[in-house]
Image 1 (cartoon, rainbow, N blue to C red):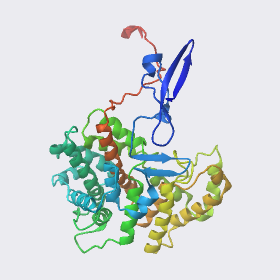
Image 2 (cartoon, rainbow, N blue to C red):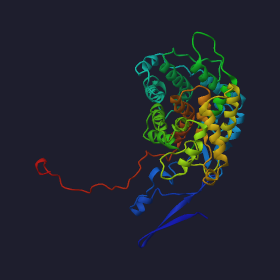
Image 3 (cartoon, rainbow, N blue to C red):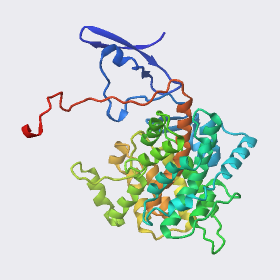
Length: 428
C-alpha cells in the first residue's frame, strides 16, 4: 500500500506521497506542495531536503557506511586502483579486464594539456593559490576544446568526462611547479594515474625521478577516498550549475570554487594550521580544554563530521595508510606529526570525544600524510579537487540523463521591506 504524509493547514488537509529508495530514509514528495498549499518549505542548507534522485553514492552516517554503486569504500580502497573506481562511478559497474585496460588507456592518452595553456599559466602571479589557477584553467577549457561541448551528445559527454579526469593531475601539478618557478613536467604514458601526478609534482628535467611505490599507493588511496561523497556542497554546486545547461568545464570550475571554502575542501589545511597553533605536544591538554569550553572560540579541526555520527570509514583506511607513509619515509622528528599522533590517541580515549562521537575524520589523516610527503599546505585542497572531479563528472552525467531534472530554483523566506512608495531625492 502506498504511503503518504498528511499536512493540516487550518481547515484544509493535504496528502503528499512518500517515496522509498533502494535503501536509506524514505522521502516526502513535495513537488506539488506550493501548488496545493500556497506555501514553501523552509530548510536552510537543504539538510532535510532531497534535491535529486541518484544511484551513485550512498552514506549512512549513523553506521559509518559509505558505498559507491553498492560497494563499501574500504573494499574499493584496498582492492582497486583509482581508475577502476572512476570507471565504477561513471558506468555503474566495476570494469572487466578489457574494459579496465581500455579505460586506463583512454585516460592516459588525454593527460596532456593544449600547449597554448602554457600561456594561460603565465598570466597568474607566482604566489597565486593553486585553487585559483585550477578554477581559471578548467573554466577556460571550453575555449580550447570546442569539440565536446554538446551536452545532449553522449559521445561529447564521454570525451569531456575523460578530458577532465585525465587532465586534472596535470593542471594541479603545473600549478605547483609554476609557484616554484620550475619548468612544467609533461605526463608520461607509462605511469599510472597517481604515479603520474607525483612524477609531475616532483620531477625536474635535470635528473631521472623514480616515484616511490608506497607513496604512489598512498596517493591512489587518497584519491579513491575523496572521489565522491553524495550531495555535498561542491557536488550540489556542479549539479545546480549543470541544471542550466552549462557546459561541463564551467560546471566543474564551479565545483572547484565551492570546494575551496574552508568548511569544505579546506578542512585538511585547517588541521595543519591547528597543529601549528598548538605548537608542542605538551600543550595538547591545554587546547583540548579550550575545545571543550563552549565559550572559547578555539575548535579542534579534523574531528567529527557533518554526516558521519560514527567513525568516518575513510579515516580508518587513511589511518593505516598514514602509518605506512610515515614508516616508509622514516619520519620520526616532525613536531606537527608528533602533535597529531598524540592528539589522535587522546581523542580515541577521552570520554568527551567518545560521547560526542568526535572521531578523527578523513581530513585529519590526509593532512598528516600530505605534510609527511612534503606537499605544501596550499596544494591540499587542489588534491581534493583532483580526486573529486571524478565524482562531480559522474553526478553531472547522471543529472543530464535524468528526465525529471529541472533547472535549480530554490525559494526563500523573504524578511525585507514590503512594497513602499518611491520618494524623490529631495524628500528622502
